[in-house]
Image (cartoon, rainbow over all chains, first blue to last red; front, side, top):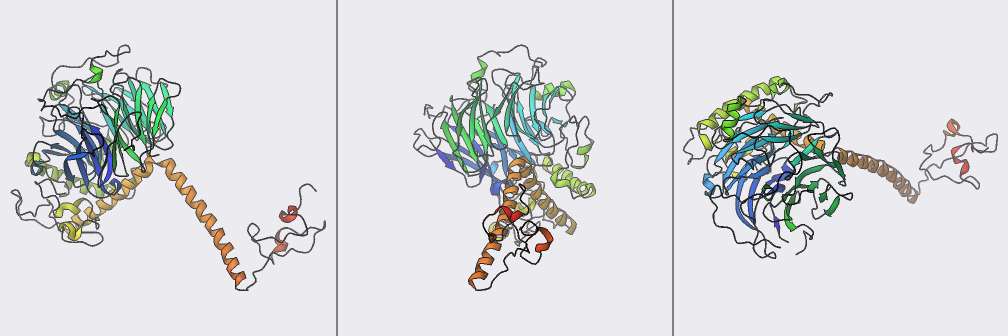
Length: 318
Length: 291
């Protein structure tokens, strides 16, 4: 299975929603603590034995903590940069004309970006300045700022079935569900006793959401009855950094953790942990499911490697 | 691998392949959301009256946000705020607004808040580089022409406040050098930033960090003991006799007296090799509880 070596430490990887063989990777120098960043756009070659090719790369003045593909233009990528800016890159344009936009409204590191998959004209950014911002391409500034969290917001994710609803996961140990038409959050979920680092919506049930936390667990919640979690997935030995619901299988979740492993779960089974991949030799901090190819996974980590593999196979197999 | 690698023909803007979940209906009951509105996001948000374009979350007024803490417990101060008064930050925040105004003037080109290069076309590695960090001695300095190297590296001097010294930059005026305080504050910002990121990382790895520290302390503890043992061994080799633990005069039961009476000897009870007092180890610790 193909592997790509990035010059900097990996932070995030996302499959393109338009091309099944294309992915974007956000990286940061010196583990994202100090230095530059780079956004890579990679293309898998038709032969699995051939290496991954780099289509484009863009340098930034600070680490790239997250990337998100546009759902409306196949060549546009959003980068969440650690200097507090949100940048848009157009692969169709020469490097000298990129980035096509650079929004500076967050006062701290931007930690996540997510493009609206339903209405496809807006995206969210969440930042360590405790806020989430809503952006559209037709406005020069952010459209709205969501400020209720009391600590860093690590992740903000759109509901895949509802154009106006998203959720945000924060270090204040709450998950909040928002409607962009409402002045304040509609649901506050005290989901964990420690910081929540990531969340994602189930693609087949718009009321199910999962959270990943420093307490080493992944929890799945039904937001209509949020007193108790639907289930708790234990198996990681350190904080769980990111997680993703499968776009193809209702109950499948992939998560990556500071314990350097990537785990795939079926949250409805008693033995929820389906597989554990320990191919990374440093913190695994980015993982994604392909929307176009069922079971295709990508992960990246601080070992500066990007792996792409089919679920059930060994990522390191040549 | 089952994916075919022929890239599809350039899909038009609305030619997004359908999501796998779009065909399936939602499997559970009614959701607690208002039905989605028609129209694009900008219109929907503006129609709802909640739009507030371009709001900048300054560090200083973060604590003034409404409805913020539903936790019922105090939230820790942010790591980067702990040692710095808000006044310092206030001054800084204003510089930030200033720059963002600049950014919007030039539309998409934007303005690096701290002159971080790259926004003006291709000249990524101009002076502005060090801008954010100041301390980037590693890549500062000569490597990318930012002028002033040094351990705290090239701060500001290589780049004016706007980071453009590029002669090809159509927007650049003559670069003005930042004042001393501006530079000093930027350096401070860089340092605070650096520690802030480390702190966040430790934050996210609370348990891991705890275990690491425990292991480290244990290691120090052990290595201290090892050092003592080695030193004694070497001294022995050199023929210097270290004092052995001497047992005091027998106590009433024929046992060595515990405690202060032994003060003449080596009191390192745990590690000193104990000359086994005639037979059993049981008595080393004092009175045998069985007696």
